[in-house]
Structure formats: C-alpha cells, structure tokens
Image 1 (tube, rainbow over the protein chains, first blue to last red):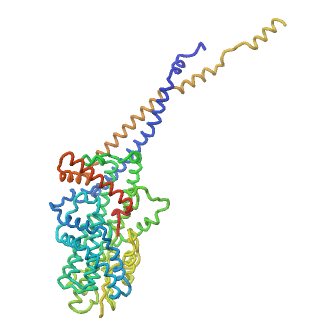
Image 2 (image 1 turned 90 degrees about the vertical axis):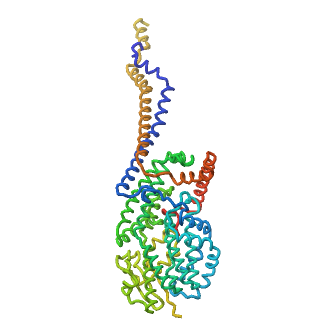
Image 3 (image 1 turned 90 degrees about the horizontal axis):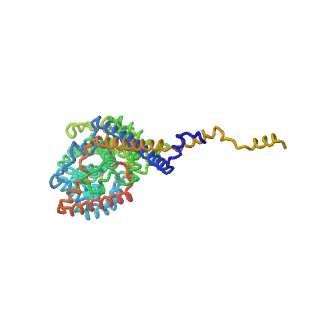
Length: 461
Length: 122
C-alpha cells in the first residue's frame, strides 16, 4: 500500500454527486442537442424547397400570388360588401337539397315537364324566402370586385358565398320553370359573376350554371342570348386554374411558415407565440419533414398542371388514381395533421386539372349560338361549322381531346359535348354528369365515365 | 515438534502482501469515476445545441417570404380602430379575434373535415 500513486489518490477524491450532475446534464442535453440538429436540418430543407419554388418564379406567399400586394379593397369594398351581406343571409338555407332533384331530372334519359312541376315547388318557396340575399348578389354582380377584406374568412364567408351561389342557381331554375326567359338569363349572368367571389373565398367546387335549363325551358330574347354568350366567353380563361393552384400552394407555404416559424408582432398575443404548444415545439422537425415532403409532391403536381391539354388529362388521371382517398399507396397512412397529408395538395390538384367547368362553359356558349341560329332559321345546324363566323367566332376546343367540341342533334334536342376524361366519344352520353351531381366531395372529379357537356331539350308540343 | 517444523507451519500462515494486479484493478475503478469526460461532453452538447438553435433562427430570419402582417393582425388593427383605438380597445379587439378563431377552429374541426385545399366542396 505504501507504493500507491498520487494519481489514484486524486481520483478517489472526485465527488460522486458532482459526477452524477455531469452525467445527468449529459443525458438531458443529448436529446436536446439532437433535436436542435434535426430542427436545423429540417428548416434548411424547408428553406431550400421555398427557394426552389421562388427560382421558378412561382409565388410562396399570398402577397406574391396576388401580384406583390395583398388585395386592397376599395373604400366600400365594391362588390365584396354586398356578397358578404348576401352570404350572411344565405347561410343555412341549404339550397342544394332542392336543386339536386332538378339537376337529376334534366339528366334523366327522357325528362318530362309534368315531373318538373312538383320538383320546382320547394325551390320557389326557397327563392321567395331568400329575396334579400338574391338582391344583394345582383347588386354585387354590377360592381367591380377586388377581393374580400381581411378577417372575414374566419366565420361564414366560404360556406355563405357558396350557398348564395346556389340560391342564384335555384332562382335561375325557378325563373326557367315559370318561363321568365330574360330574367333567367340575367340570373345566369349573376351566377357567372359570383364565381369571382367563390375563387377569392377558395371555394374549390365546380360552380355550375344552368344555361342548358334556361335554353330548354324558355325562349330568351335575341339580345339576352347575345349578352349571355358574351358573359360565357369572358369566363373562358383556362389559365385561371393554374393560377389558383399556385396561389393555393403559396397559401400553404405561408400557412406552414406562419404556424411553425413565424411570429407576428401586430397580432394578438395568443398568435405571437412562434409555436402553439410544447407538443408542437417538440414535434416541429417532424412536422417540417412532412411539410417538405408535401411540398415536393406539390412541385410534381404543379409540373403536371402546367402541361398542355390533352396530355394533362392523361397524366393527371394517373396521379389521381394512385391518390384516391379510399386507395392510398400501400403503406401510406392518413396523417393526423391534415396540413401534412398528401390529400391536401392532391385535393387542390384535382381542381386544377378538372376541365369540367371549362367544358360546360364552352359547350353552353355553343348552345347559346345554336339557339340564335335556330331562332333565325327555325332549324338546327347540320354541324357546328354552320355557326362560324356569324354566331360563333370559332368552335371552342375540347381540352380532353385537343379537337373541337362535338355536336349531336336528336329528335328531342341536342348535345354539345367533350369526350371527357376517358378521352373516348361516347356519343354524347352525359350519364357520368348525373353521377357527379349525386357524388359529394372531390371524389366527383375521379368519375371518368362518359362525355361531358350540355344537353338542350326541344319540346315538340 | 522440532523448531524447524514450527517455522514451516508459521510460514504457511504468514500474511503476505496484496497481489500485484490489485493495484491495476483499483486504478481502473478510479478512472471510471472521473468527472471531466462527462462534464466535457455535456458542455459540448450545450454548445452544439445553442449553435444549432442560433443557426435555425438565422435560417428562419434569412428566408424572406414577403408575408406582411397576417390577416389576424390586420383585422385586429381594424377592430381596435373601430373600438376607439386605445389600449382597452386593443385588448377587447384581441379577445374578440382570438375567441372568433377558437370558435372557427372548433366548428371546422367538428363539422368539416379538411378535404383538399378548399376545405369543403359541393
């Protein structure tokens, strides 16, 4: 024992308590440092993804998406105030319940006018009770619309505007059923005008109009037909779908950024916290990791959405098929945070590549031209070429085929149609449209059955 | 018993020194008890953690998303002005906005599953 070294003696003097503290500090700091590293790596990935979007000249915030600045509504907010007031009155009226049977009636194989009368009863009652909301929507239709004021999105806006749009549809149907032709045309134009508000309110649904019903049940004046055709032509802006899709992604980036990384010094104190809870602080790298994956998926979808028709139809069909809500890729599970789920961009994508509204608008425009032709010559044109150039500048193209729209006259009317997402001519069979009317949610965009277009009925009585 | 036999027996039970390897075993144990490796590792982790935190903040600050004030901030300012513009008005405006947002979130969560970017579709 006499030969014990000084080194061994000093080692035995280490306080076990101090050593325990050091070990505890190491154990606590190890996951914290790992978390910091992971957080840094993920934020780098997110920033790189945002820079990649910017490098393509695409927007990464709402402000950029609308051309550099947030929409600044005029002093009285133009049409927006009327739409908002109408939306408040329309909220809860639920017009779709009364409208759907009439849409189904129109798409039946052999619709009869006798069956229409009982269906129109509830609609008339609804329109009578919603007169104030409709007046506000009509007033708004005459005014410029430069976006909704900030803050109104939190409560009633989106749902209310949608119901207001459906109320106008209900009125169009009622006026058509009662034979008030020019008023029905004005109502259709009001329906087209409210799309501005629906776009701004991020309503991703197909906003249908009832031109085929008006033409089937009434005989509008020539002037009314010309106005209607011009209104439909001004709606022919296929580039809007891509713009809306890019704007939706910009909103997504902004939402993710504000939620996980942003602070807002002017917001209420509840919102100035960079994170909402401890859980979100701990989970932030994981959320960011998923958000980056969603943004990468979004980048692929944007590339497909930018391709030209009809190639876009084929490529998008494959994507939508593999991302069906009920048939997710093997191993993929629905994320508990909807912001981080693949369904978020795919849902927006299904809107961006759905040409149904474009086709129906174009086919309706052709149908109006056919009505003008029929009014002048008391017969249907033999082909759509007969309409050019007196009634139609050119035959609108079919996005699904890349060729002009098709025309199929019959004994009891005619159909103007596109070959539809299946890209086959089904001889003007619009039965898939009936499925779409009955299908709710974005699943309707996955229906790829028959043709898409409008059918106008001619009553021989 | 002879003297030499007694000597042999005593030699048999005589205490001997510790084995040579015992010293190494004791020194090895004292090495485990050292504090400095743990303290150094903990300090390194602390420095790394702080460095990555600062780097993350730097990344966040460097990514200029051109966001502008949020809709929440703008509507709070509007409400504050409408309610008189003083501190009390600001508090009331913040309460209203937060209450509205909570109401909106709970209503949305319970009635409208997020289904695509537009939320709900007809």
